[in-house]
Length: 343
Image (cartoon, rainbow, N blue to C red; front, side, top):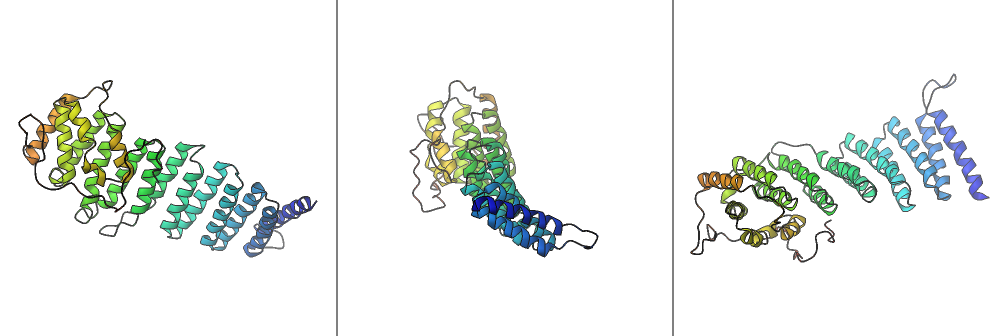
C-alpha cells in the first residue's frame, strides 16, 4: 500500500517539477530551484520504493534542473548517484552508461577532467558484460578527454594504465593499440622527460600486434619506431627488438620464441608483459621474411651491426642491463592471460 502511495506522490512531484521547468501565463521564466525541490522529492520516494526506473527518471530531471540553474557539478553528481543506485539494483546497463556519460560531459565542461574521465570509466565498466564495443569506446573517450599540454606534466598516466588493462582484458587489441597511440601524443610534448615511457609504448605496440599474429602491422610499427623515435635502437628495449627482427628475418623461430620471454619485457606495462609471454611462433602464420630482412638492414644503417656468437645466434650488443620494472610489485607472468585480472 505504501509503495502505491509513494508511486502516486512521486508521479505528482515529477509533474510539478516539469511545470516549474517551463514558462506559463503567470510565470515568465522557469523556476529551476522549485523544480529541483520537486524532482528531489520524487527521487526520494522512488528510492524508498527501490524503483530504479523511477529514481533514474527523477534524478535525470534533477540533474537537468541543476544544470540549467548553473550548478553543473551538482547536476553531474546527481546523475552519478542515479547510475550507482541503478547499478546496485541491476537496472538496464545502457541506461546506466548514458547517465555516467552525461555526467562525465558536465564534469569536463566545468574543467574537472580527472573526475570526468573516471566517470567515463565507470560507464565503460557498466557495459563490460553486455556491450564491450561501446564500453571500449567509452574507455578510449576517458583517455582522450585529457587535453595535450605543451611542456606540461602528463596527468593521465593512471587513467591510461586502467584503460589499457580494461581493453586487453576484454581482448580489444586494436583498441589497446589506439590507447597507446593516444598516450604517445601526451608523452611526445616532452620526449626528454618521458623518453622511457615512449620507448616502452612502442615496444608494447609491437607486442600487441604480434599477439594478434599481424606481423605485417608489426613491421610497419617498427619501421615507424626506428624512423621517428630518437635513439630507440640504443635502448635496452630497442636492442631486444632488434634481436627479434633479426630472428624473424632469418626464420629462426625457436630463437624468436625464446626472445619473446626475455626479461626486457618485464618492464613494460604489466598487462602487456603478460601478453608478451604468450606470444609464440605459429606455423599457420606467414612471416613476411623479406620485409623483416629489409627492416633489419635499415636498422643496421641507423644503429650499427648486432654481435653474433659462434653458433650464429644474436647476442646482446652492449653490457647495458635489462631495465627493471617500473613498479616494485613482483609480476606473476605464469598465468593464462585470458584468465588474469589486468585492472
